[in-house]
Length: 77
Image (cartoon, rainbow, N blue to C red; front, side, top):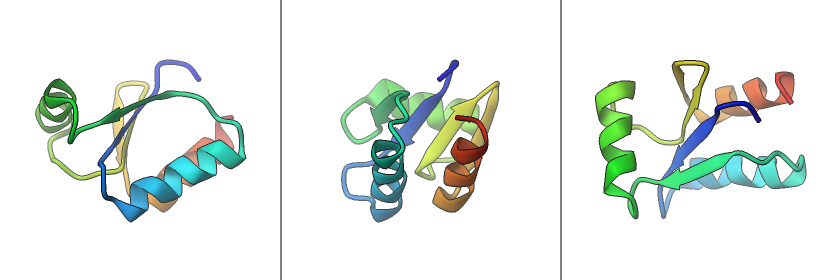
């Protein structure tokens, strides 16, 4: 999918919810774990404005909240 990136964490049920939806719908996009990738964490905080996950970067925007991310992905498959 375009230039999308999903920021997730290691132990985050909301992140797993989004990842499971993506798996069920065969949606592939870059997924980065902020607990394992310090650069991804820095990018999320500096550009997105907060450390909240899950976060979907798309088209220059940062979208938070698992349900909002799922709805966005449904509409933009």
